[in-house]
Length: 74
Image (cartoon, rainbow, N blue to C red; front, side, top):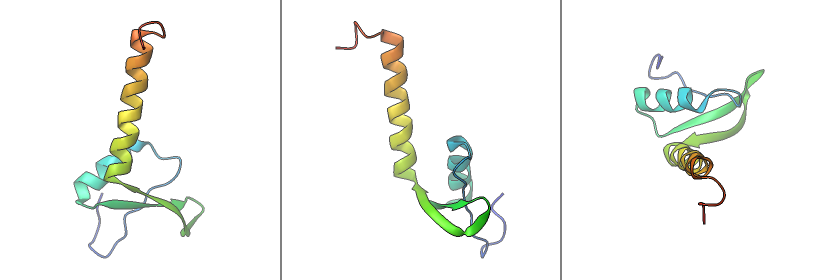
């Protein structure tokens, strides 16, 4: 999964967040460039550990809101 030290690990826009986070953790890296699947030289952005945790927190909050329902959300 991590390859050689000189290999750059990347992610793609259509890749599952879970897969990107697993790569970050297993490879011991802090950020993962997001590149165009058709042109790996075209960097679209990056995912950092903080970005992924923030997305997971938003997902958790939305899930809790759905579970409680709109009347109990206030």
